[in-house]
Length: 337
Image (cartoon, rainbow, N blue to C red; front, top):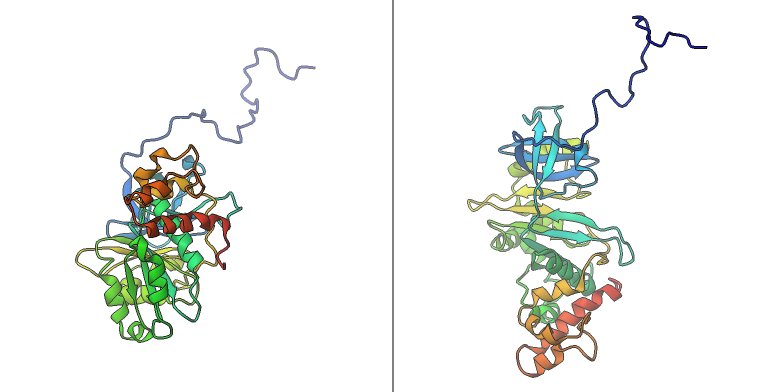
């Protein structure tokens, strides 16, 4: 039985509201032309601390970005309260195109690719020569990630007072990777930081290395205490009060030419599941022309590879080809090999 007439005009008819809102849905996204540009300094549990002009702004990602995530080093655009005042929260509505990316997977069988840092110019690979022992395969993997992501590598060897650096430098000499060799005493008196600093001014450099090699100690020496304090409320988000390298953190260099250092968590492994081997050859401009006669899908480590003939004709140093093949083979090896 009908409760109300067909043309009922009673004022007391109850209308059930739409639980998802009464506004019609649309695929048109706001342009946010008034958004402020900033740089992501650190990310913690969905909260991103960004530098907007000269102030720190805590923000969250807007729903309209979908699954696209911002990482340390990203250029982003924010709306809402960008004053940086305590207990305020802005929204990131746009993420800029990345000039470079440092990516890794948990291991070589993991299909999930994680972007660690965006827009860095350089990757400083920090390795101790002893205590703990150097891990060349891990260095190789970091080099592959740098070449694949568009970063220039820098090798920083620590604790040379405990073991010589000659063998390791010889292994990477053919790659032409810039390097700095330091001692424990130089870490204590600041000389190590001064020498590394020469390679950092005016650039954004991400630091990687496994625990115990002195990576964070070096970063702390490079960034004066007052500069770390100026980004101190970055860590107020975590409630820890200080950075313990559980997530990447960008810090400004005290240099008239500018520059940033990005401290990343210590790594136990560096998976390369995401790496396309054909991109690694781009880091070897002396070898790349020789691949024109390679068979389709060539791994550059097989009998039909044209690079052998290219090197035999004197176009490149055989040591360079050996280094390329060693790096490409890192996907089939474990870091401890």
